[in-house]
Length: 96
Image 1 (cartoon, rainbow, N blue to C red):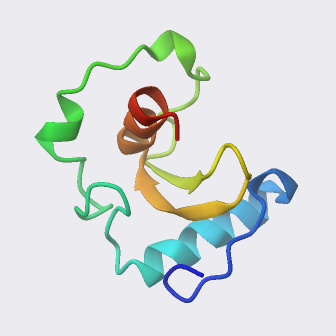
Image 2: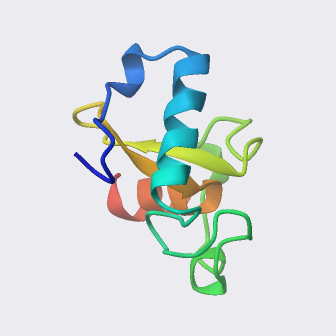
Image 3: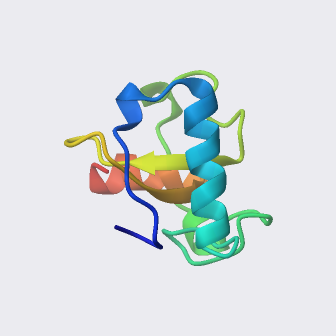
């Protein structure tokens, strides 16, 4: 359990449930990105934004929403709320 939230299987959630989980994580994380530790209401820090991303590897609408519900791609379980760009960095550079 992270931040008093019971993780759920991202793949089993519908859009509304994903939004509710994302909002619950944002609240539990006090508005901070679980990856970079900076406010989700601001752009990600330069140390993250400077990392080049191969956008061809991501869905076309990946940056449509500035905050993503991060989930473990191996287990499907939710982990927290992250900046969209942090999510791309996690996926491309760390396989998360």
